[in-house]
Length: 361
Image (cartoon, rainbow, N blue to C red):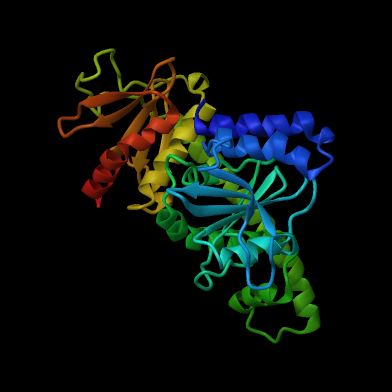
């Protein structure tokens, strides 16, 4: 299975067995160990990789244990504290993690109840676990945007420096998104005051504040609706584009201007294509603002472009047949396709994608 498929499989399992998970041990056996093994790729039966009931005495506590420690080259890399399924996670549950973080080499800590996973590091102070997670994974409500970040924690891809470097942006990005979500639902006085001051020059009396609270709420809702409608119109317009005439010869010249119009009803964007698109964005975010990386789906292929410009192709995903390919357009406008063993194999072409990004910069 592809990485995203393994996450989705575990997500489905939660729905099937959640009613039987009455204890922490049941949660560990049914959900957390499968996550460590099937998703992150660790051998849960090898104490050189996974140490259950890990003990590291601290100055104030002796013999206290953390549920799991994940090792690499004999060094503790990740600490994990578990709670039973359905128990709401909070920092009060992370006492052992806070203490152990300072007496081991671990830079990553995970607090989980088998469904939700909170990932912590030491962004605020060296060797001291932050009070807020930099990333939260909810298997019962998967956000495909964070899948590439979870993949960085797998045994085969784990690079602690890369994870910590990305953690800073993720932490504050998620916090800002949360604040915006809360303000959209119930704007605070300062939030409303900011917008009022931009459009109203008079004194903000209680009556004015009350009026602008209602106006701001309406404006936010209309802004969201307008944004959604604009994206829908853009998607409909994109589906009207003309696809390249791809032939069975993988090096056949493809003239970018020699196009045919597809029937829009035949263009179906699959979950595999979206997964591939997210992986490409995760790779290219090192060089490009992800907002500049756009997709256009056609009958023949799923195109990924820079700035939504057909003259700046980044790659194409050919996922409509059993054998999947990633294609690149060379200087002579020929497409060269490379077979993929799985969707995750796109990561094998990171250097080629980054080189194309550099070419357009």
